[in-house]
Amino acid sequence: MLRQDHSINLQGSRVMDDSTAATVYGATHAPIPAPPDNRILAWIADAPGKPFERRELMVGPLAAEQIEVTVESCGLCASDLAMWRNQWQRSRYPFVGGHEIIGRVSAIGTRALGVTVGQRVGLGWYSGSCLVCRACRAGHLHQCQDLKRLIIDGHGGFAERVRTHWAWAFPVPEALPSALAGPLFCGGITVFAPIAEFVHPTHRVAVVGVGGLGHLALQFLNRFGCEVTAFVEPGAAVDEASTLGAHHVLPSDSSAADLRRAGPFDFILVTTAALIDLAPFAHALAHRGRLHVLGVGCAPLAFSPDVLMSNAAQVSASAIGSPGRMLDMLAFAARHRILPQVESFPMSSINDAFDRLASGKARYRIVMQAEAR
Image (cartoon, rainbow, N blue to C red):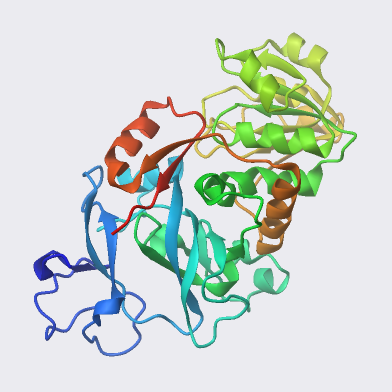
């Protein structure tokens, strides 16, 4: 057990001893001391960009519809980096990141459904939905009006245990190994959701950017049966994109004329946040084609609607996906052995892993592996 004076709660109040009242995240009653089993060892950053340190975190009683999961592995993605730095001005400190989690159910709330103790499950960016708003009733829980986000409204998977609403915990197929599958619960569902909604096997498709998202998109689209073109950064390895599933590989700064010759494309998936001019890609869309943007913070779209009107093309964007899409994605990935390419770090090397991610050199995802306490 770590020293008592190193224990903190999710709102940053110091816990001095077991008799001191403490504010507990999620509590709806008068503050009460948290019992020992409500203290979780986690890797915690106290301010934007500060190093992570391992110490105790107070989490309070398990809510009736929550489950608790013992973490086996947890992916590290660009969203964790942005949240650690507070780039989106939404971070809470002390901060515990990690939202691509594989683990075993270790506790179940009194009203939680569909899970059993010991079951292997995966968790992603979202940790709760109201289940009663129009979006939820339509099955779009990821667009809930009162959506809870794991590392914004609680703590993430860089910890020994983590909590979520039961509806956002997903059984992991046996074919998907715990050490590799975590990124599917963020990057995987992010690219799969628009593919499942808009793409047909007969389509000619393009993926702009082959990184953490793009390398998964190439695999999904190839297994869908599409003819796939990858647009990569100038100087990037062509062989890598081909191995991942691209039939054709071109530089992302190709001229408008080259893009039109490579197309037309029924579907163009933009997976990069790089400042790329997307106007030439819009010109390369087929009749009723679609340009779909996933990269957060990419350049504003700088082309006239006239570009789309002439061939009834469309532009759209999305983030993550519904629980139903998540189950479809996991089944499809298991059937076709679609897995991210990862670099693994022990959880104790979390600061080195963040440095590696920030360098832009990781190929293509990073996964933290849990260690014995």
